[in-house]
Image (cartoon, rainbow, N blue to C red; front, side, top):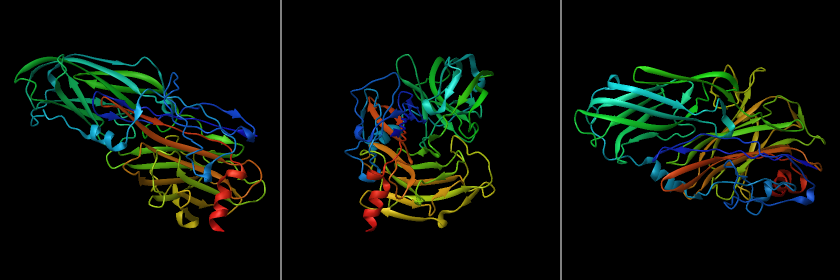
Length: 440
């Protein structure tokens, strides 16, 4: 029996206080297993590797609806302990008190600007890729409330998947907060306002470290020779990078991809997108059983009531490719058709799962499922999985893909992991078994 397992990971880099989030996919492993080699998995911090990687499934905690018979994954992560999202939200929304009334724009007063980008020329969007950026500059004759603007190119993004307001602090040599930067998504600018730690008409030297991301709407697919730039003072600093997205997961003709593309760490809302058949294959069941998709929490730390989420199903019009970033305008009626009402959906209360019936044994169209909802306040992850599989089958068919974010906390720092997995599903413990039981 062949089982495909893939683990994806997302890292959020925090600049001293507030956090910045971006997603990561990591094709971790593909294992060939017999059905007797079933292995439970947990999110433990006793294992380590060069990258923060987490397998999302725990067989003891996963409802029987999505317990594959043969599955194994590596689980590795950093030393941070998981913390509830509520605690992370407190740190993320904390605003420094030493901010004066906005004064004048003193960007022209910057001298000796220097910007250093990270050495890597490859940004792997699904492996935590971001651009580590260091700023150094001097500035003359500034007072509390004065501000400077740092301009990013439209290929760069300051917040990743986070919907929260992102702040970038600048500290002096005494570790005092001398300026707070806020990112404006509409202009791609960071506006730094100097605090009352700065004495009137001061001359200072400052430095800052930023974690910047590739804008996944400007660059939605794998692209070579992408120019990124940052303007500091009167100088533009540029770098050329290659941007890479991983291809969708595939098992036979079954193929699926998914992401959490937006998350709010204050009210725990999220937007989760699954692409069903993004490769445009002819997906058909071996015994003419109708196809279904099952959406549910992917681990025991994710507490999302699937009966309360809102979902939409869209069909791609024509033969265009879906964007690899999945951050698209699905209300664009020239490209997508809302077909939510065409497909029956049920909530399985026993497994806390949303089941979508495709009502036929084959599909060749490209579908997108967009789920929006909120996690409970005691959640430590936002983790959702989706399958495409037969309702009834005696063969191991189908694929499951899980994506999520996990917060860890230590001294105000945050790390977010983005996880994914895929495996073929067997009849004995696949969605079809529990669906039949719930209907009988």
